[in-house]
Image 1 (cartoon, helix red, strand yellow):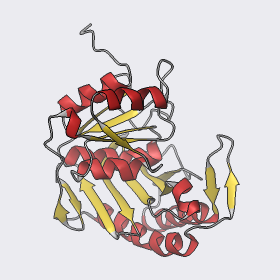
Image 2 (spheres, rainbow, N blue to C red):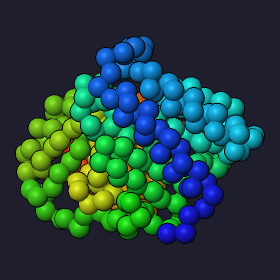
Image 3 (cartoon, rainbow, N blue to C red):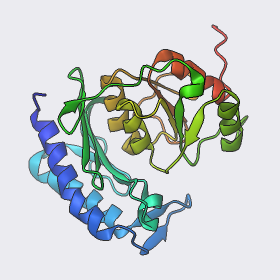
Image 4 (tube, one colour):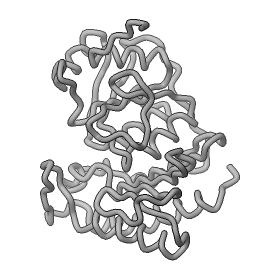
Length: 262
C-alpha cells in the first residue's frame, strides 16, 4: 500500500496513543459524562495529543474529538475517538481501540483503527483498499444466517425494538451475537472477515475511520433507517456495517426496518 502523508500522520498518532493506553489500562480513575458514559484521563490526554499534533503539522485544519475539538468548522478535519471502548478499558478488558480519520468537505478520505493490545493496525485510504498490519483484508463471504456472527453495540435499539428484541430476532434466525462495547473494534472485525455485521451507535468520531475501512474491504453500510451514513449524523442514528448487501438487508430486518420500495 502506497501511503499518503495523511495516512502516515494517522499511523504516527496511533502509535503515540499506544503507550498512554497501555499505561492507563484498567484505570479506576473514571469520570462519568452526562450521557452516563465513562471518560478517563487517558481519553483526554490522547485527544489533546491529536489536537497539538494537528496544530503543528497541519495549521488551519480542524479536529473533531470525542472529548475536545479544535477549529471544528475547518474544511479539512481530523476526527478522533481517543479510546473507543472506554468501558472495557476501565475494567481491564483489552477490547479498545484508538480510531482517527481525515475528512475533507464531509468526505472520509483516510482512516486508522489501532488495537494496542493485539498490535493490530487497520488502515484504509479511499480507493486503495484496506489493510491490517500491511496485509490486505476483505469481508466474509458467508451467505447462510445460521453461520453468521453479528456484533451488537451496548446502546443499540430503536423506538420499536430494544437491544434485547434485536438479539432475540437474531437468535431466531440462527445468528450468533457478541458485544464488547467498542463499535470501531466490531466494525474492524467485520472488515477483516472475523464477523459478518456490526450494529452500533453512530457518532462521527468512532465510526468514520471504521466505515471507510469496512467499505475498502468490500463491505457495505447504512443507518437503521436504511439510508447512507455520513459524518454529519449523530450517535442517535444507528449504524450497520455488513459484509454484503444481503447481510445488510438481513441486519436491517433484525432492527425492524422494512424496505417497502417506495
